[in-house]
Image (cartoon, rainbow over all chains, first blue to last red):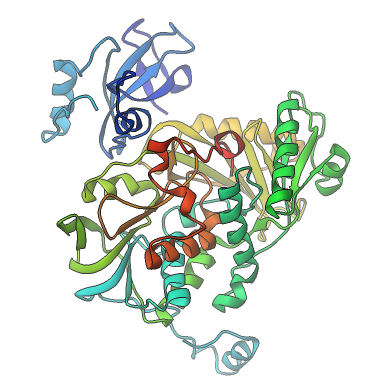
Length: 109
Length: 414
């Protein structure tokens, strides 16, 4: 059972109040995109065993989307941040690197 | 390999069971193999077995990080059925189900296949229409299923409550030849047969890297040294993404946790498998008398082999509604496994961007039933470069938009 804090309304609640929305920072492909780019955007996922940046929605709360940094191998949560970003903010990066010094932001995929 | 038979049992009974030998050799890795299969679960071992049996390729190693059948093969709810909507799915699952029927004789190992019948309950008008459509599709595919009414459901499952508080049972999709089998025995039986053909099953041997030159695979690095090979089959369920990453390509797969649980053993009360997909739960009774229960997956990526408690609660709530008599049962054990789920909820049996590497993954929540069919098709794909069974399950279908969309029909419960 994950316990998450919504960065929009600052409520801390169990995961049943939230809904997971998959990998974060996917780069949206427009009408000019090649088939391979669409495939990548729609289906290909990093699916790491370790640090995962992902989207969540506070469905049974404020209803807003946000981003979360979480370890898929330990279920440790490093922090939540605004969905209006294209890369994880510095305080999230340092929280992750405290536990995983070798971790680097790979860029939007 | 000594053949198991009633005479062998009688002979051993006369000499205090001193003559039984190990079912398979615990092999040491050699320098080189024609084919290396990564993952000694059901699918990996079945692939090795049919490579040897159907194509005479026996210089094969099956590498396993943990122990044989210790992943999802030993963690599932052992349901076997083939009532799928789409033609490619029905073909591979029906091949699989028919191979289960003769598996004990074929492997000379009792896998306890029990064709007791599987009912998928229809509890909304939408589901009634969906299952009628599936039954018609199955008739065209040569898969024996029928849509049955509530009276027949009650006759087959006397303990069911037809008019539950939320979703009354309106009928069901009945596959009389579906059922269950002993999951460990499937892995052990294949392992014994593979070992007998001279293949090496190497446990506690984790693959740490995939070696390649000029876009062609040359071997793998493992915790027990480097091993060379011509062809490499990745059959590792939940960790497919990790292996693909080592080989340098990405997969349309996400790994999530799926949980199951069993109750204390009780007297026989239900001799079929019942799946209730609207309320998210499925149940069968094991030969020991335990009620074997499964439900839905967690919504988020997870590699921890444990899931969230509220999913157990949701599953049990759904089943208590459907089978009121289980409300006082105590649950004995609960466990989780990591399943790899693709975008269209259908598996991937495919060549990969690296020559000589083949991948068998993405079985999601329903891999056990597919073990022999998947092994049969994947062995053909590895040996000949193509197979009619696996043709539609290529990786390229995601770029081409040629999905095998079972997500509505089978995305929840298996």
